[in-house]
Length: 213
Length: 255
Ligand SMILES: Nc1ncnc2c1ncn2[C@@H]1O[C@H](COP(=O)(O)OP(=O)(O)OP(=O)(O)O)[C@@H](O)[C@H]1O
Ligand SMILES: [Mg+2]
Image (cartoon, rainbow over all chains, first blue to last red; front, side, top):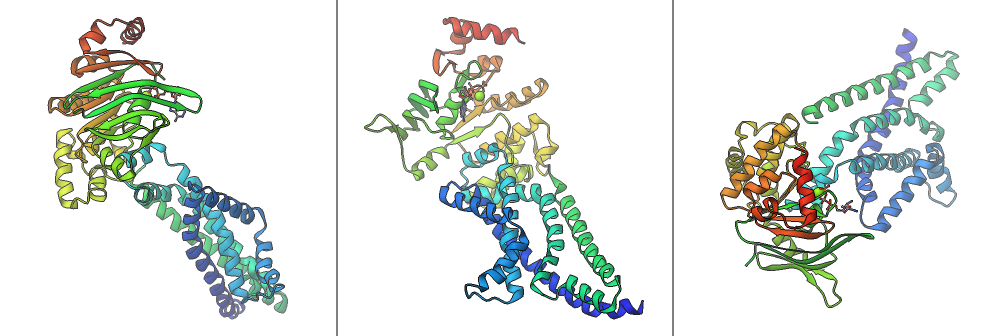
């Protein structure tokens, strides 16, 4: 017990780094994902193709590779970034692609009749998107977004490879130093705590959206 | 001046010719019923009138103003978006599947477009909406959501929603076809009420009884053309064309 109490301060410090990456990624990738999801169903063909290409690249290659590329790869051409910034950039790029795909399928799941009803009432395309389509999309994409959020919690451990002192690295260093697996257990509890909280949060959101079908 | 005048409308979907020279003139206060077999182009024609579909050639005038006419090459040329918008605002549309906004309450469905498009004060829009709900017999459902209503109630809300934009012409595309038979009556009743108030109406319908009772003019379409057109008495009671006769006997047998 004393050992765990001793472990906690450094682990909480690592955890705040993990949380920073988590919230930064979510807050930036979510709006970008919505915008890109709309762009993917755009009538502007080049924009649509570019987004398809983007999604293909970032969903088709490992996040780990993207992480290493942004930090070490770009360094070889003289683009040197802070480790954390490089990690955040790679995460935003990657998660935007996944979220864009979720929003695209959400937008395409809205019945044609909704657009037509809005159209004959005289709503502009922008009003139709913001007042009619997106509010319904948000409800439909909540479950897949919830999954991505859980994935993001776990993926955050990948920035370990950039030698950033996040939760997992702190735990691993303690394991090596003290020759005990307890730090790994503590780290697991931290992750489980986070995933449980977000799971509950999304459950709550879904019930909040249950006022209509 | 006609409320709606369509002349020689042609429309293809890819290679499929759906409208092959359809013309229609609607006078103020008239109720037009369009009947005909499935796939004959009734919906497409109605949807062309308010540009939910674009035509390939022909002329459409709304209240004397041209929305689209043939250019020098014989192809349909539409007026500016502003003009089209203005003309479309004169028409209300009711769909087979209601297409209510499921995330909005009944009242919000009714005030959405008046507030957003016509910039009506929300309080005034609500007043108007309540009057319209009263008219379609749904005053007590103002705060319900569409999923809480029966199909017939949803369609009556959809009619009220279209009326909230104060249209001069109401278009209906098979407004009762998605309803259980016992629910069609309440919707037809509301439509009859509109007809009595002299609303100009164009109704695509399979309800021959309704067409006979309410329509000033019945149009029988088949295979992209108008086969027969005239008073309900002429077209439904004394059809001349054999395709009309065959269609009517089939529809009336099915009841
Ligand atoms: N968007 C579309 N793209 C391609 N073909 C279409 C489209 N809409 C309709 N069609 C075709 O055009 C023809 C006429 O369709 P339309 O919906 O106008 O018929 P309808 O008379 O309304 O039939 P119903 O009584 O079944 O509603 C049909 O063959 C239909 O398959
Ligand atoms: Mg139809």
